[in-house]
Amino acid sequence: MQDPRELGDPGTAAFQLEKYPFYLLNRLVSRYNLVIEARLKAVGIDIPYWRVLMVLGEKSPRSVGQLAEAAVIPLSTMTRIVQRMVTARLVACRPLERDNRVVKVTMTAEGKRKLSEARTITAPVYAQIIQGFSIEDFEHLTNSLDQMHTNLEVLVPGRRNGDSAAGTESRIPIS
Image 1 (tube, rainbow, N blue to C red):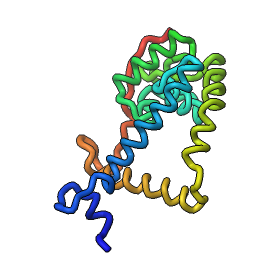
Image 2 (image 1 turned 120 degrees about the vertical axis):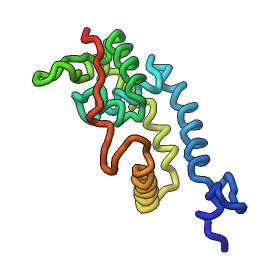
Image 3 (image 1 turned 90 degrees about the vertical axis):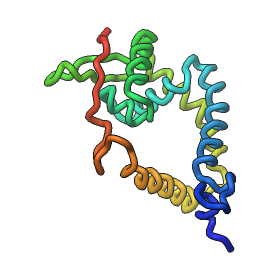
Image 4 (image 1 turned 60 degrees about the vertical axis):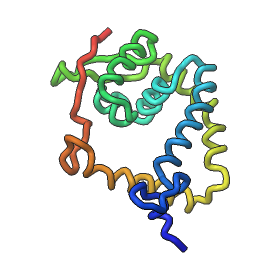
């Protein structure tokens, strides 16, 4: 039996697209976004808003830089998303007391309501996605994905080993 890692290596003659993890991940995320986008639209939010609300639902307040890193959205894009979410009254921004250049973002009551609605309509999608996975299989999947992410860290341009974008901040107007 051929090593499946070799079949997924684009540098080999044996390469097979269906064995390439990044093709499979992109295919999965594209399908997930297609399904989830329609559901989120029904409650009046889009995928970027959903990601921000989910991150803030886990821990709030967060700086714009922390939001960008956790939501896997470039900082400049996150700044614009937060500005739109402030206008929509889903989040509020305030300067950090010890450093007014850093803005902390929190969910408003409306943001919490939208997050609750979105969680309710997206939970069945998650249940469908994990259908057929044993606890061990699911744990192995998440651990493997995390290991691949960690393995890539040393190749990220402009980062020293162990650095993160968490210290990166953005100035946004406080409304």
